Image (cartoon, rainbow, N blue to C red; front, side, top):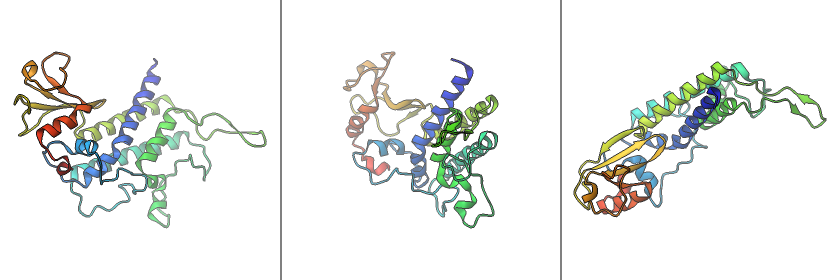
Length: 262
C-alpha cells in the first residue's frame, strides 16, 4: 500500500470516528464530570432505553449555539477546538481544489461576515461538524474530480480538482489530532482505569476498565484463574475479561443503577 493510500485510509477512519462519537461529546457538554461507574460513555450505550436523543442533524453547530451554563467545560472546549480545526481544514482544501459553482450542494461556502444572519455569516459551517467531516472525506478520496456529462451530452469541468499530496497529509494530521482530542475527552483513548469502590462480585478482585481507540471497552478482573466469574480469560490467561457484550451482566452483578450514571 502506498503512503498516499495509507494517509487516505487513516484520515477517513479518523473523521468517521469523530462523526460517530460527536453526539456523545455534545451530551458530555450537558453532563457534569463525575468519577462514577459505569462511566457516562458506557451508561448511555448500555441502557435498554434512553431518554437522551443522539440525533445531531437538527442541532446547530457549537459555533452558533449559546452555552449559558455548560456543565462540562472541558468537553465544551474540546468541541469548539474540534469544530475550529475541521472547519479551517475544509476552508484550506476548498481554496485549493474547489471549482463547484455557487448553489452546488457539494460546494463548501466560506464565511461571509457581511451576511444578514448568523448562519449565512458562517457559510457551510452552519451545517455543522458532520457535514464538514463528510465534505473533507470527499476531497481526501478525490470524489467528483472527473468531467461531468450533462443532459445534452456535453462535458463540464469537475467540481473539484484532485487533492495535492501536501494537503492530503495536512488532512491526515488534522483528522488524527481532532480524533485524539475527542477520544481523550470521552475517556476512550488507550488507558487502564481502576473501577473505584466496586470489587469483582465473584472473587473480590480489583476491576479495571480498559479502553483504546479502535476496540470496544472491556473490564478485567485481577483475580485471574481463581476468579469463578462466567467469562473468558485474556490472551495471557491472567485475568477474567468482560467484553462489550458481557458488560450488562457485570453491571447487574455490581448492583449499579446505570440510569444514575447518565
